[in-house]
Length: 224
Image (tube, rainbow, N blue to C red):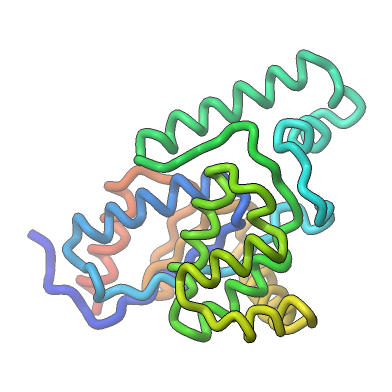
């Protein structure tokens, strides 16, 4: 039997926008929250984790990007491209099983600006809504989802003030927030994402099954 929900249970989620496992993990976490009957009693806070800080800002086909990242000098071989495509299709099947759109031929790009706008969204209480909508846009294959136009479009969808988003994109505002998130992740020994911390005490690493997220949520509620 699920314990009575506590008020605003905080769930910190370190993730990157372009991480497909983070995308799947977020859907499973949402299902766990619903299954535990917590609903609006939780506050999911996205935390920045840049998987590839040196990625170019210009969009690049995901298969080409992954092939060069994984294969190095062998990146242009047909065997390497087939390997990364198989990886993408495997994750696509998991995403589709969660009811998520997933385009294996999407483009990818640097996510630093996306994380800075997410930090702004967190200040407005819209962090989770913005990050989730941005991931959907990216994985659905929306052109330039991670560029200025894409970030402004998603911000508008969730109700972020356009003038504030433009001010962030025209500056280095919230870069310190991104660095702090990543420094905290390093202090926790986080080497990959998603990484979820419930109530500051219960950590779940990786895109786990719904039941494992439920266990962490139930433990946090019971300890409150």
